[in-house]
Length: 405
Image (cartoon, rainbow, N blue to C red):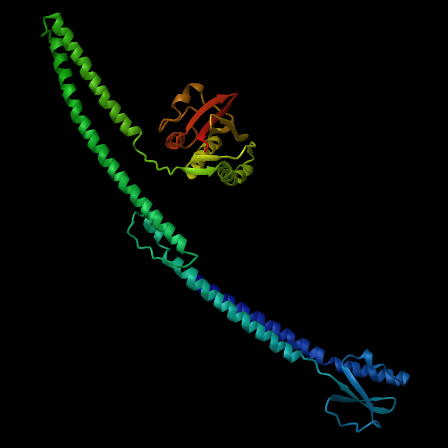
């Protein structure tokens, strides 16, 4: 706010300096213009002295020339001066320029502009600077985890939507925190429950193993029964471990999809606007093949998110020569394929690329967490679609399958 005040003071000072300079210039121009009649009167006297006659139209500032014998020489209601030409005196009447009126008019315009500028600065201060100042500390407080920071409601058309969006962001962060706490609590309870459940078959395995090791079972039938008991209990433990693995690998993220309808062209336009300038700067050829527009059954934001993840992967793991988006139709579905050159992923890894936290052998020098394709897989499943990948001629192809309406 202090910076804006300093800016206002600087603008006002510059405005007054410019007004003063312009007034000085106009005053000088006024003096020069109003002295022109003297020059014309001198030229008129010279013409009369040389020719004995004159042409009044040559002198725009002179309105009349009168000899001493025409009337009283010094009597007139107009501005005049007396000249001598050819031994005679003449009264030369002239008009005075309206330079003073011009200066007054220009200063009135300057005054109106000054009032308009002050009004504009006040409007900016009242409706932009002050509301922004009230929101200045909100992002820092949210970053520190203070979700109770007050966010003032603003009716300003400049910040009303912004404050509404910040409130939505805060609510989203708060919901995410609650979900995370609930998830951590559920996981902890699950792990405690499974740990307790594992102890029962583990104890049975130990007992049967000790009995077999000490030869307590003399009968072959009992030894077989003991071994089968160990096997059964081991199956129970394996089932518990599978549940732990599933809880740890799949339930750590929740996805919300709002199924609707969207034109394919709208989604592709968004993707092109986002990535075409970026890829042009890195000299990567970005090609979008021709397609027939259609209406897709999907969440447009989520489908665009999936395409963004695929293009980001193409940028990170490709060789930077070419990225292409192509299209096809099959069985009432639109197939959107993102491909990139320079694929170094081994074909045997394709079945695992959609697993959470899985990173291929080509990801050693690339930062990431192995979640991009996992998220795409989950989102496309929630939108009743599919995603699959292929490798051909050292190019990586990954296809989103979205149902058409």
